[in-house]
Structures are given as C-alpha cells and as structure tokens.
Image (cartoon, rainbow, N blue to C red; front, side, top):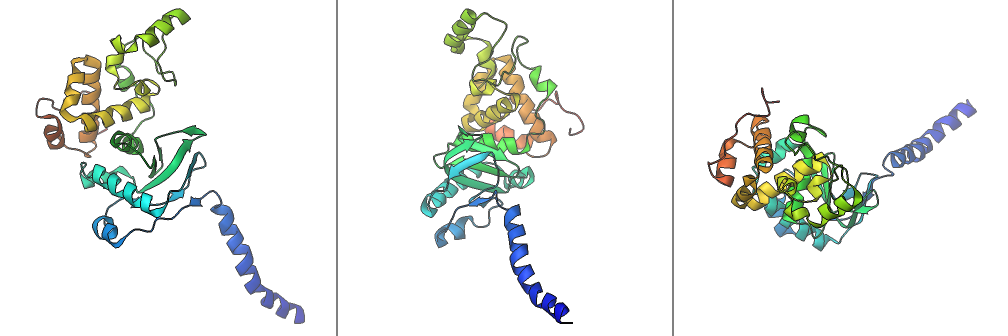
Length: 266
C-alpha cells in the first residue's frame, strides 16, 4: 500500500514534466517572433482571410524576425497588394499565413519570398511581383506539366540555372548569354529566372500578368508568351478561382479563355 501511495503521489510530477518535454520535442523546429499590432491596424485588417504569423515552421527557411512596427508596415502593404485579387480566390487558394523576415534564406540561399504549404515567407522589403509570384506557388497544381513545356521552343529545356542551356559549345553559350535579350526564345519568358524551372516560369508569368496588366499584352506578340498567358487564364477559370470577367477587366475583352489546355475543370 505504501508503494502504491508513492506511485499516486508521483503521477502529477510525471504529467507536469514528461508531457511538456514531449510537446517541446514536437515543436522544436518552430521559431517564433512577435507582432503586436496597433488598434488602428486591427480595426482595418483583422478580418482578412490571411493571418500574419511570425513563425518559421519550415526547416529549409531561415531569417531574422523584425520588430513589431516593421511587421505592421509589411502586413499593411501586403494586404493592400492582395486587395486587387477577389477575396474568394484567396480563401480557395489554401493560403492561410504570411511571415515577414529579414535576411530570408531558403536552403542557405537568399530569397525574396518562399512558399511552403499554407504559408508564404517574405523579406521585409518585398515587391508587389514577389507577392503574386509566391501566391501562385501555393496552389500551382503541378510541378511538371507536359502541356506547359510544349509551349516553349523545342530547343529549350529548363536547367535549374539562371540562364537556359542548349546543345551548344561553351563559346556559343557565352554568346547566347551575352545576347540573351535579343534572342527570340527569351521573348517567351518574362524574366531570366523564369527559365530556371517550369514551376518558376508559371509563377513568374502570373506575377507579371497581374503587375503589368494591359502592358503585358505587348509581350504576347510572341506566340509562346501569348499561349502561356492563355494557359494561366484558363487554369484560373476552369478551377473557378478567377472568372472571365476578372480577366476582361484586367486585360480588356480582347483575350478570351479558349479551353485549349483544360477540359472538365481539370
């Protein structure tokens, strides 16, 4: 009986010590900062479908947490940028959190933004284009899509590097790199970064489509660029994320979704 009584006396100690350590072990990779928002900010922005969460929950992401005043300024600018998109799109996208960091890194490399699950991480001096780029990553349906790859010039392939490579000698590649802005293939990409990976190409294209608006239409003189724009327009319409009316307002009614790439909403 005495031993049994000792066991019962020790039970509270077990629950107070062992369980907290188990919880810490599960959350050990989470790093947290602070974000104390003013009443003015909360009254205007607290009902947004996206929440500012000053936490790093990805082992691949690094960065330093800014002070609360900086976070509030970043959050206000971020919300104003996203106001251009319908709130229903933001809700359906799956994006729930945004985190602002100084010196943002992904796998040890500096980055302007990172999409990870339902969260996007942004450097404090983020650009409008970066917001839309990372936003697109959250719900890009495919890492690879043969239909998208087939839009590019047959001689092109994504290499994972800043500049594309083809079957040329080193001398020829240096010449291509030097004259890249004059190359017709380059006109099928909104940036050199878009040439690195297929999913980056789509995210960059969407970001430029939104940021440039009607100015983007000048790019569509190139048939590859025009096809990529129509691909993304159709992707959003078929998935019921952005309707034709949105694109009509954004670009004018000249370009319509032609159902070239998707069928039955897939």
